[in-house]
Length: 248
Image (cartoon, rainbow, N blue to C red; front, side, top):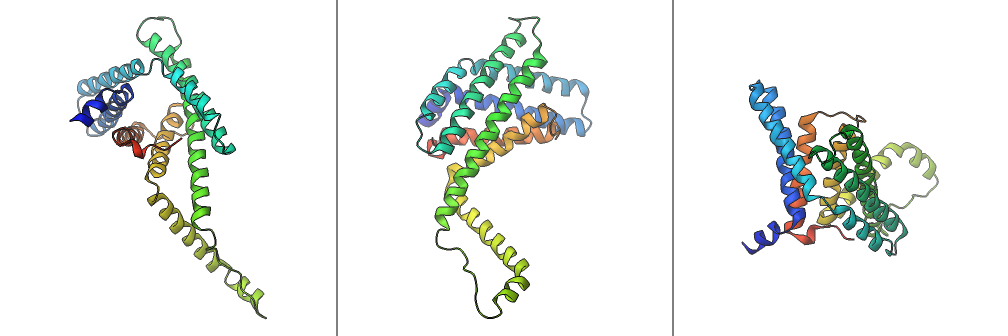
């Protein structure tokens, strides 16, 4: 119970719950539409989804300042690649939250004549850039861990009089074996680093949302709803169990 009270007290946690409910509505609406449910009921689900989206925007008011503070802290990271990826990602998140705040003002009626579509597209572009940088950071950390894990275990080249013939004849087999070893090493690294695995899966799921909204890679509401629901559940898991949050 104490963990749940602490969880509910966090505005980020509440926003994640609203996000999970919003994308659950997206997925449910798609499933009901496929099954021929009445349009009135589907319209109610979509209205609930819109209300949840507006509620999430309210919870995100002021998040730009938090993202800027996180960017200031990330500047001091010693690793140059991590410093670049994390800092620029936080800056893009700050711009995304700023556009989202403007969009909330338009949707709530405070700015009635605002071009909501333009601000929505702008916010999703910043969101997409932030996710690309997050995935780049994840890939970089995976590569570092794989190099550390596989240090000194690489295959050694063969010799002998017919070494060249053997190498040429066995090239496809060697490539297949190398690929299997790399996949096995990747699996071992990800199993041994749950925070990195969770962050990688979460960012990969989130990536399809702005790609769909911007029209760069259309996947449909069903897939978007599933990805959003999955990433929201993983985010909630990281809040409930802070050791699962990737640092820095």
